[in-house]
Image (cartoon, rainbow, N blue to C red; front, side, top):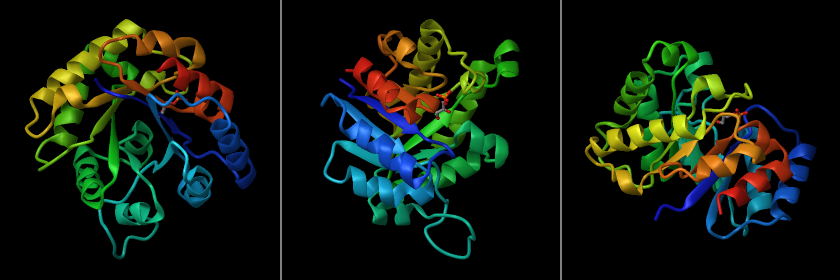
Length: 247
Ligand code: 13P
């Protein structure tokens, strides 16, 4: 049995007051014990989020990390620093990093190695663009991203994969539960072919316009083990409703 995981990717949103308000509302809500929950604020809000979530069931993660543990890398944050602060999770290879920061599969792979070495649990994102889906290339693209980021690692216990079709992110367009399940089953098949990964134990999250109104039908699918939530994770009542739909 894979435990459901619902993670909130806050992207570049938040202020001291909004983080305080959002986390207090989340922590004051109903958090079913069978669902693992994580929030991923910006780097500057991590310490505040960690302090508010300390001693609760809500874990905290970062949205990215460096591929190095220390050194002359201006502007970067090492995975070991995130662990030192108390983070459990890190999102890697998000499509917005691939798009706006030209992150390649090789770089995602190097970040993954550094994150795992430091002791972070990684959420590795994959997904095709609308043009790629319309050209019938969705599986080829996602398969190549998985191979590029995940092959060649000595151990990837605790790995989580997030399928986030780029055309569904922030657009209000969601993959249908059937489209998502089809890709999740494909991803699980690909994972089975990558040396060190235990495919049946690996959680595969769906991301892309997950809302309270569509979460339950997505979570009902066999290979959808939770969600990586963007916009709806910034509204406590919506995020709580999504979490409860996974219970
Ligand atoms: P939205 O839920 O806002 O579509 O964002 C999804 C996402 O990119 C989560 O990482």
